[in-house]
Length: 117
Image (cartoon, rainbow, N blue to C red):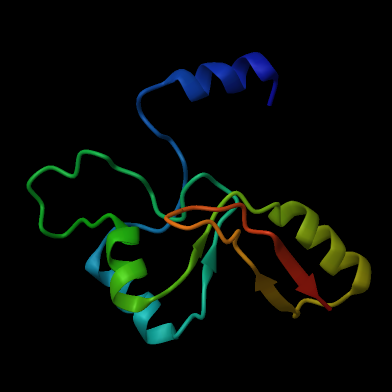
C-alpha cells in the first residue's frame, strides 16, 4: 500500500481491520479448541468495534480472552514471511515461542517471536 494511502487509512476514526468476530460463538470456539495462544498480522486479533451499542451478544474479545482464558494474544505478526519460510522448507508445523519484554507495569510488548522448525 502506498504511504499516502496508509497515512489516510490510519487517520480515520473507524478501524477497518479483519479479525475474529466478537461473539459468544467465537468465545466458545476458542475455548473448545484449546488454543495455547492466538496471533494476527493486523493491529487487532478481533474485529474491533469501539462502540458495541446495547447488544449483549458482542464482546471485546481481549476483555474475555486475557483474564478469563489466560490466552495470550499477539498482533502485528509478519505471517507472510512465515508462510514463505514454511514453503521454502516444505514444513508447515513448528514450535513457536515468544518472550515479551520484562517491564514492570507494562501491558504490551513487541512479540519477540521465534518459529523453530
